[in-house]
Each structure stands twice: as C-alpha cells, then as structure tokens.
Image (cartoon, rainbow, N blue to C red; front, side, top):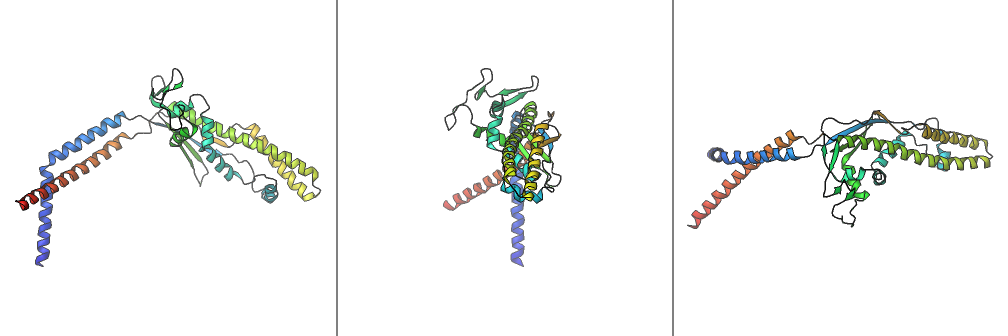
Length: 312
C-alpha cells in the first residue's frame, strides 16, 4: 500500500514538473508555433490556385445483349464481340487513362505546353502563364533542360504522368453514371481539355468500331454465301444485322459512346489548395512540435546537469 502511494505521489510530482516546464517555456512555445503558423500562411498564399471542371456522362447502349445472347457462341467463332455495354464502358474508360490516348491528345495545339509548363493563370486575360524556364510561348519553343532521355520536348510518357495527376475517372456501380474531372491552373483549359477528352474518346472508339465492323461484315458475308446450313445462316444474318446497327450508330451519333448528361463547365471557384486547412494543420503540428522540443530540451538539460554532478 505504501509503495502504491509513493508511486502515485511520484507521478503527481512528474506531472506537476511537466506543467511547470511548459509554463516556464510558454514564450518559446508561442514563438515557435507563431513563426511556423505565419510561415504556413505565407506559403499557402504563394501556392497556385487549381480549378476543376467535371462532366457527368452515361454510356450509350450499343447492343441488346439479351436478344443476341443465343448467338454469342457463333459470334465468338467469327471474332465479333457481343459482351454488351459493360465491356464497352470499361474499354473506353481504360482508353481515356492510357498512355496511347495521352500521346494522341498532345498532338493538338497547345495541349502539351499546358500540361507540362503551365505556371499560373491570368484572370484578366484568361490566359495561361507558362514557366519561361520550361516553355517560351512567344517563340513556341521548349527551353527546359533536356530530360533523362536527352529530349528537350517532353515525351508522351512524361506528359502521361502529369495527365494522370490531372485526371479523375469514376463510374458509379449502381447508377452506371460516369464522372470525369480535370484539374488545372486554368479553368478555361480545364473545360476545353475535358471537352477534348470526351470528344476524342468518342471519335477513337468510333474509328475502332467502324474498322472492326467493316472487317466483321466482310467475313460474315463471305461465310453466309458459303454456309449451306439454314440455322447457321440465320445466326450469321443476325450478326450481320448487329454489325450494321453498330456501323450505323457510329455514323449517326457524335456522342458515340459517352453521352454528357452534364457537359464540362468553366469553374468559377478554385478547388484547391484549401488554405485554411493548411494553416490550421500547420499550426497544430507546430504546437505539438514546440511542446516536444521544450520537453526534450528540458530532459537532456537535466541529464547533462545530473551527469556533471556525478563527475564532480
């Protein structure tokens, strides 16, 4: 019982000593916390604003997979895909995030500099201000130091890394709605670039499907003329009908696969950085750091004083 009381008494003494140390060094704690907090305010104000443009889309039904399910076996033999809309959506979303698609996008005017060299945005002229150490807008030339592969002009692999940071693609499993976002220092470029992504995703998938259906129709028509079995002829005729429908849709619709329910917009408010959060977190961390610094400093001072007494 006596040992427990002594332990409690020692704990109380340690706790009292802890508060005394903190109170004695309160000025140091306040100064350290204040300096870091002030620095975080200055740094956050210097940070570039980012804007996010978003589009909500739905995938167009290309095939009636239910009505064609009876012919899926024959279709697979001739290389025709009847996997349905789910596979088409997955394909187009993978294309949007691919390196080859980035390589295609940077062939458009001003896309590569806007991805790789944008420094800030001039709200009055509504133009991107480029980093002069990377890109000279007037002469349309790259001024950056050559990369690891020796090229002054950024490669599509470098552009893809930046593109992946800008891009956000999500598909709601319940509703099937697709959300695509682009974040950039320029709200105008964020809107224009997102519109370009949707447009070219539709165009690219249209080209792929037109080529595929053309080859499939050539093959199916040849098989139809050579096959004597009536049931197989019916199956092939249904497949031909399906391929003609796909080719027709590719010719009719501009929004071939992705249909915007909410088109891309030019954002009027920044999406980042959240300066208030940066300052609050920095202040909290600064307070913790300053308290730990004072306690550790006090601890080592006591150890040094004790060691000096023992040596004496």
